[in-house]
Image: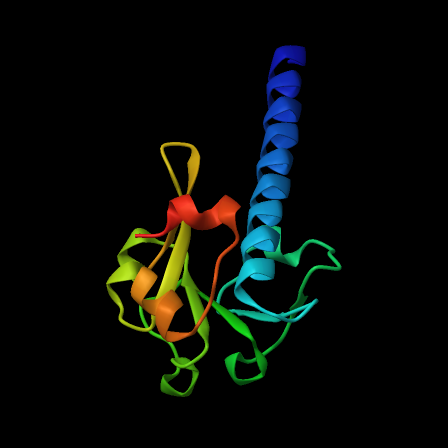
Length: 134
């Protein structure tokens, strides 16, 4: 029983650190994608790491009010396609309007930015994120 409790406790602690890491990654590229000090972010589905307290961005209730839109579904509102749109799956990169994606694969975070979208939106990424451009 004690072993089971210890395993459960360790899994909770390790997942909490994954959520914190994910939040830091999001904060890093939100700062790079927006010129605002605290950009507004819209998420179409609950993402635990983005719902943690932060002073780096604020969540809004609609994509029309957002500077950055995080997409987890296949489609978004047509009125939001001109926003900075970031996916949470590799397959989102197939959409023309998606600027990049952040997803986990084999237990590791992956970030991909599309050069064409960065250029069309006149976004210049900092040196630390240049390696993620395709």
